[in-house]
Image (cartoon, rainbow, N blue to C red; front, side, top):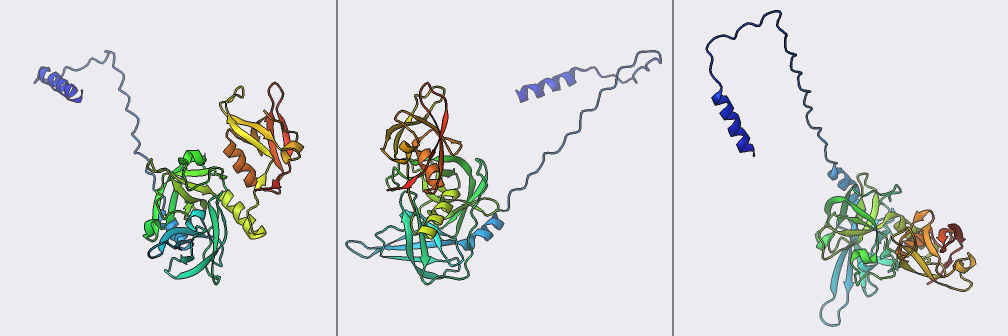
Length: 353
């Protein structure tokens, strides 16, 4: 099309008669044509500077460690696995993934940013969150702990993943928050994560690889919004992280009570698409006698529409949000039965398996 337009213009210019004489003057009483208005000035495109990723990296790198596990083998030499960890306290306490420090490990070492390596011990591991706490032995006194983000996370935000993939040492990748609230099914039903885990992952396209697990996902302030956990193998740029609020809850539970107290509501439920006006919600299928749900008046076939004011459409969301609130509760649910008005109920959760 452009070539045809250019040729047409040339033809028009070539066919215009040449006139050597000066143009005839316009009489003073002849109507004058209106001047052609000038086109508006063209504004140059606004340049937007990229964030200073290097400054964020320099800030967070001292808080990221390698976690080296020695795994005995039935035959041959012991095998070593390398993951990442995030320093959460000045004494060198580290949070990582439970799968990074399996119970079969015969020894665990932590290597700091200055390449100093020390022996560490597992304080606690929780497979249903894929989180663990390990501590150097003896404790440190001068480490740089991270700051966990408290502001809500939004899809599209810049993020950096910092860790030690494939044992390469300090590695930084950049991407954005791709999505929120991903569960075990969204991750691709991985065999090394429990199906009944309390998962609501942050999804990112910042590259996460073998050995990145346990490292922080940080925003442009250097605040941790998640702990890298998994990738979806059949995809590209689809990684997942345990959200900062659940990491904080886990640390509070372990450091205060020595364990992660799992919430029990005394209910069974399934994902459901029968509720009028909603594509998906959660339907109660069993209420344990004398359990928290029964005491709050819940019944079979009740629909759970929200937890603590946050709408839910899957059982995994109910499980995650109730665990985030914790055993100390209370837990507010909005529920509805067929043909009845919406109502709020308050559950006093109990600790359970």
